[in-house]
Image (tube, rainbow, N blue to C red; front, top):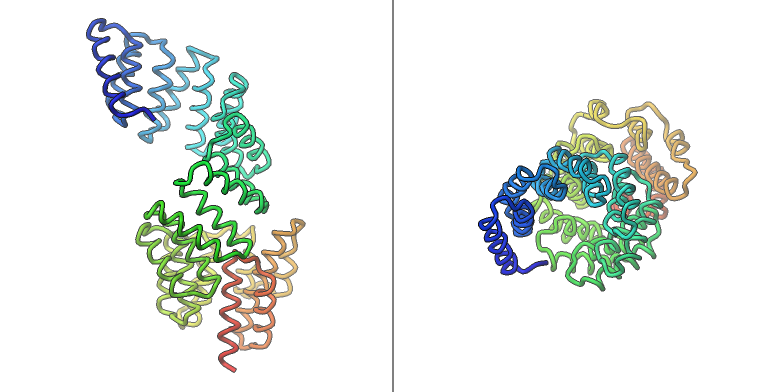
Length: 413
């Protein structure tokens, strides 16, 4: 990062250059870049405008003005500028890379990948183009391709903590927890003040069942970034998994204070309130989670479960209008609506991918247990809860739910 004083001196020099030669387009463009580095985007854009007025084919000014527009959130104007930069310099690798980033921001991942690929073709040593293409592949769910791109970016720039961190996320997505943890650890070694890999390593450790180490990592992330709502929520999940509900609720509460639209934190606080017998609080939290994210099937399910215990009329039939009823856990919802039997749901949980099957069978058991409990079949409910508690992945909310239900039913006998 260039020191502010150096930027001020640079701006003074470019200003003197344009005073001496008011038609010096490159000096305007360079001063614009210095202003952009200071965060003064409006002045930067004004200078790029002047540079382009003086030299309508100055591709670097179009590219850099595009970066400034993108930083202001004006993605369409950014793309228009990158188009001009490429028009006047078809071999401008950075402009392709930047346009790819703008297409990613718009969600046009195929165009983004095409642009990053062209940037790589023009400059095989541009680590950022590999990184950006990896992000686009990851967003499409093509994790092997993403990992390959991140690996090439790391080969080119071996000390980039950000790329190690994001490759860890991709590896975690594939279920390769050991390699993910190794990448997060390397990111932390390279940049000990980087909060994200602590949070991500904590999530992987929680998935592996090492809740104490996970809590330590989430705590480190919070120490580095006191406003890290996701780390508070994740630490809450680890506390919930350990049965430390008071600490969990405190963390979820801080997460929603920091981010009042954090639906997942409301959802998890709602479940934890359910585990502690606080039905009104659970219902309020799940209602808030549903309002923030009406498409979430799991929120709809638990809202129905808590609502039934609170003598609130079911809204599950209406909720299905916003939920994707072609994908799991749609069979579970149909079971609650009386359209499928528990046995049919268990059959629907089958999947060729072992990890997917394990998660879906876990959910078939816990929700089958909830339905059995609703129908007064406590013995069958206990059997299914025990199956879920034994077989659910450590990072599934359903595992904590099953353990809580087993404890509650045990206390009733």
